[in-house]
Amino acid sequence: MMILGIETSCDETSAAVVEDGRRVLSCVIHSQIAQHRPYGGVVPEIASRAHVEVLAPLLDETLRQAGVAWTHLDAVAATYGPGLASSLLVGFSAARALALRLDRPLIPVNHLQAHLYAPFLGEEAPRVEDFLPAVSLLVSGGHTCLVEMREVHGYRLLGQTIDDAAGEALDKGASLLGLGYPGGPVIEKTAEGARTDFVAFPRGQVSQVNGSVDPQLCFSFSGVKTSLKYYVQQHPELFEDGTLADVTASYQEAVLDALASRFEKALRKHRARFATCGGGVVCNRRLRGKLAAAAQRCDCAFHLAEPKFCADNAAMVAGLAACSPAKEPADALRLDIHPNLPIGSFS
Amino acid sequence: MNILALDMSTPRADLALRCHGKTRLQKQWSEPRKGEALLFETLNTLLRESGLTWEGVDCFCAGRGPGNYSGLRIAITVMQALALPAQQPVFFLNSGVAVAEAVFEQRPCDRVAVVGDARRGMLWYALFDRPQAEKSTESPDWQLVPWADFDAQVPVDIPRVSSAWSSIRSSESVALLDVGAWVDADVYPQASVLAARVETTLGLGLKSEPATPIYMHPPVAS
Image (cartoon, rainbow over all chains, first blue to last red; front, side, top):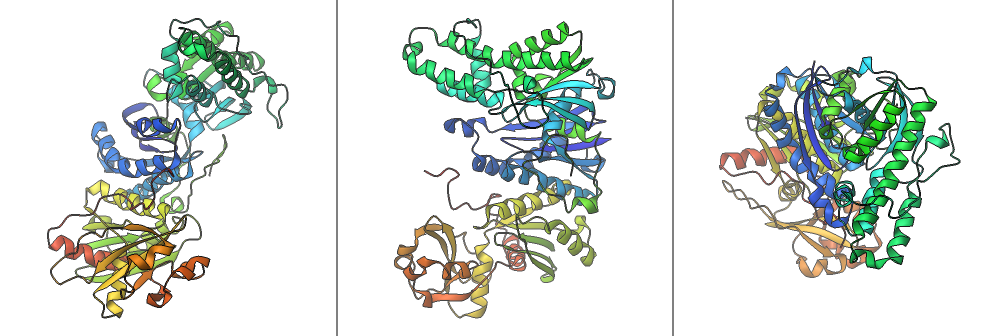
């Protein structure tokens, strides 16, 4: 089954052709980082304008790179939520038009679930059906949560952030430290080889939450962010005395430790045999190491998404779509975007 | 030549199929929210009624505004996506052409101002000259102007027309305008006019306008 995937939920325009949910024939990503950098974060209106400009040529290039004719596609998939409404609208409208034009099913895809599917992309990756049930960590610029993935579309939310997402905390930290945007990569680079225990930043324990999630498996990054803000105010000399890298490394360590410790706790509590991680922050090599070590301590089979499939991309959309219920062309005409779509929801 | 044109720059969406120099089918609908719920059903219906296949469309056309940002993005993206599989041409035209044309058909004037509410205390407008036979007009120069300065910038002997006239007329700021010079109705851009203009423009060997909406504000407020 050959599926064209389209992803425009935030600031990456991406399209991919994936065969049988695993074999990535092409995955083209147009990043808008340079356009958002002056603002220190994603500006929704800039993102939407850029999607309109690049999507059509990018789709053409995706098919060309895959060496696939339009008529060889079996379905069209696109992210329909969660995400920025004005960005989702562009990719999902294109997908609906293509499904109509090609008379193929349209498969609406939940962006969060697509990230959780990313570890199963590639012919060397384990098959998703052989890796369930799994405890999965999703950690990106917009979302941070732990889920139990019982089947490809059966999720139970175990814990989540009660304030900022981890990627957001790294962006804000980088901004406070004057390192630029996006925060994750620049913090990782600055922290390389520096002391991680130079400042004892808090690890953001959560004692109480509303709903059915476990507070011990929840995250809070507002404390570490505030702590960094005060530290910078009290130590303005850090920008000149050579300690910037150590402060950065300490901050990064606090964020990564919070992620890894909750991950390990979830593996133990749920006696997980399998564990996976997805999302843009998983590109961080130190985090990858910490998560792998945690899984090893829990005697748990562990598989991470390849770095190229961690950030927003359409391969994960097309991959998950192969395991998803399709909408026949007639039903697809009435589908709409869902900017606040929760994990585990379908249209 | 078969041309499929779509304009979604206003709350009233307009889709038209022009075949061999005549408007064959035209459908208009009002979208209560984001503008795409009825689009795909209407596209499907129009094509079925026409008996054409997608391959039978020689050129797709989308109105690029100015107007509703979401509508413009959908119209442009959808027309591009429909054209992609067979690499059919897509032509983009400002929607004001169609609004001005409606006035030229009704009045003997040689020039008209197409106006819209740009919010934030501003109006947008462009001046259109009556198109001459065998000559396609240039893409107009869209301007933003405070309501209070509009009459000073646009001579009152030039008729003003807007698809948002009801909203402009009901605004408190309407007192700043010489309302006598306005066409007293909401005049919407018709896709059939865009399709006809595309046919003329292609016949003259001229190029499409850019494949982007006409945005009257920068993406980030300064």
